[in-house]
Every structure is written in structure tokens, then in C-alpha cells.
Image 1 (cartoon, one colour):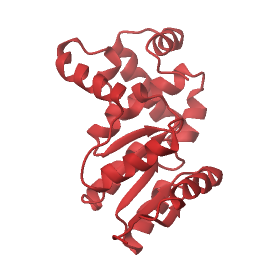
Image 2 (cartoon, rainbow, N blue to C red):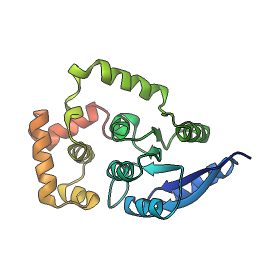
Image 3 (cartoon, helix red, strand yellow):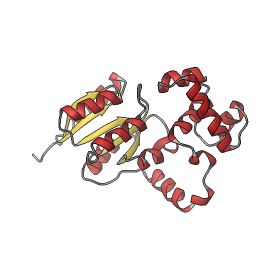
Image 4 (cartoon, rainbow, N blue to C red):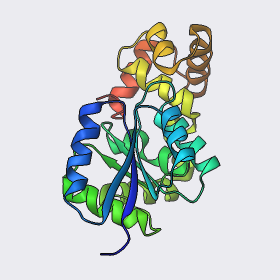
Length: 213
């Protein structure tokens, strides 16, 4: 048998980790060598053991997946990271790829797609779905006509999505491990950049552009 791909699964839901482990156990070339429930744990595991690939959830406590991705790529540049998310591709995929991810897959995807994506990413290639490939092509060709939210920083963008989904500044602060004052600063910045006046307009914008589940 050829060398197995040693995988680290990083997701804050034990049931999801167990489900992924189950799917991957059907393929002889995969070895789930470790699990982590957050970004800090994932980094610790990578420092302790040898891995060939990280399956990383976008939404995690302590550090969100994009932050964790940046830290992993900074310290372990050669290890490919495949992002898994319950969020639609249009929300985080392009940001994840720009931050160093080798691929992006939604959790609604069929198990066979996950297997294909892992093999592709482990071989040094990128993995994107056909719809995401089209979105990336459009993002390049329409650079001068980008939607206002594409100019936001990652934190501003997260704040936008969370406000649009009905979360208060206090809830956002708790989820992102930030003070309410800091979240307020992000809110003020994104309102200014997007030329919007209040949360109602932000929510309307988020719904219109498919940024809210």
C-alpha cells in the first residue's frame, strides 16, 4: 500500500469529527492521526506530531478558522489546509483561499467530494468546486466592480455577517473573543466603508448578497 495521508481534523463539534473520521476510514490511503476542537489545539497537535494535511472548520471557538488558518500557514507553510464549512461558498471561500487554504468544501458536500478534495490537496493541487471556480474567475475579472463587502478586512467581514444574522455586539464579542468596544470599532469601520447607516441596512445588505444563512 502506498504511503498514507496523515490527517488532522480540527472542528469544535465531536459529532462532526466522528463523522469525518468514519468517512475517511473507508479509504485505505487516509490515516486520521489527530483531532482538535479549536485553533490553539490544532497548532499544538501540529507542533507535537507529523501531519500531511489539516481539515479545518471555518467556525470555531477561541480563534475562528480563518485566523487559525493564517497561524498554521505562518508556522507550517508546507502543510496543505482544506477548509470545511457550514457556510455557503460565497461567504468565506475566497477569503480562505486568499489566506492560504488549499481548498474549500461545504459540509453539505457528498462524502465522495471530500475524499476527492483531500487527495487533490494532499498532492499539492488546489481544490475548488465548479461554482467556486466561476466565482474566483469573476472576482479577478470584475476587480474594479467589486461588491462593497469585498473591501472589508476579515474581522469587519465577520462582524457584518454576524450583525446581519441578528447577533448583538455582546454576542459577537463573546464568539470572537473580543471586547464589545473593539466590535463597535469594527462595526463603525464597516458602516463607513460600505456607506451604510445602521444595523437594519447592514442586515438588508447581508440578505441581499446571500451572506446570511
